[in-house]
Image (cartoon, rainbow over all chains, first blue to last red; front, side):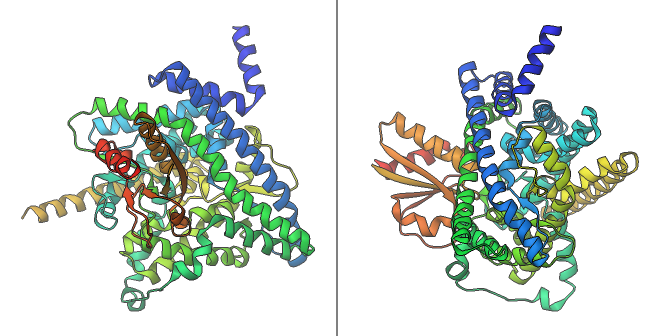
Length: 451
Length: 92
């Protein structure tokens, strides 16, 4: 027993780059991937982590002091750096309990499919990290594995149901039938968009708005190009830090590099996970042969919509401005500005492309993300350091537009760490109520369609 | 050698899946090919340097001068072969 313990400790001490290949190999073997292929996947993911670590380190070393100088010069306190969802996904996959959470989420999906409680077959293992991180953060705060698992399972149930309910929008508005989008980074905005859409429709200016922006791509297109966005932001922050010209330019180029390099490193994660994801797909599809499903896909398939692109190009610069003026916000939006499209995609579908409503609701969505990101940054930063993300401790913290910055994830996480005895049942009760109402509504709709 | 640009929402997740499948298919058919990935938002500024644009979802934003193939089937696994044939058709 003690030998086992020594081996386990040696691996833990070696850090995430050693843990990851081992964990991923084991997950792969359980799904029936061949050992050599599973190990190669694991090693690729370990390499991805090493790469993300390098880039985040460089970003924090360059951007951290500039952000601190901004506080001193102008009192703009934006010292929570948005390192992007990729870095957070890397932290998620490096958690010691990730393997348990992945199977808990998959089991939740299979059980719900078997009970006909959902139509979404979600084998997009890659996007499990959004549901897993909530459990990991709950586990990190409460030190209780069952609480962590429960939090991820609740995230999964809510995510699958939201996917079911939004599938008609995906078919009608985006024109992709037979598919649902269990990607929390896109679905979470529904929490803002549904009530706000109802509210704004009471106001004629919004309801009847015919606002269109021509040539948004032409004039604002550079906000959609990560390299340009990084360069501009880097130079702007350098100027606000009162750097000299050569240092401003160098910060600009180095931030452009960060914007380009983070996704390159993250794609190694995706490459490594692919064989496992495919195996999970075959595993589940075999078990539910003949049943009609909604196939769960990454929301990446809908963000090419022109309304989504136009809304994002307007929301991105306004979000940067908002970050500077919102009282209490400390998050400096950066790496995840590149994926604002995901945060507004469902908003656009719900308003059916009403641009004025899209911009207002898109900003409320990114605004709440900034606040939730600020509030949960201390725990996230400490968690990232605990798994071996090598970030300087200069007082600044890290966050992102993903993880518990997302509205849904934030609510579930806070319910678990504040007063779980009260808030978890409240959360479940509210969700159950919405579920019942939605079922009634859908049945009524189906009956009307049948007539 | 033909060049293919694969675009998806963030240039990472679904485009990696599609790019890998295109590379594998080309290897099996002995076609030399260079596959790059990017975000859908960048397509207009990049597509002209390529022979084929493959998108993982519906792409209707903006105009490009190269042929475009939608490859959602490579993600869902339904009619996967037909879509791969279509892509290979442009690369032969």
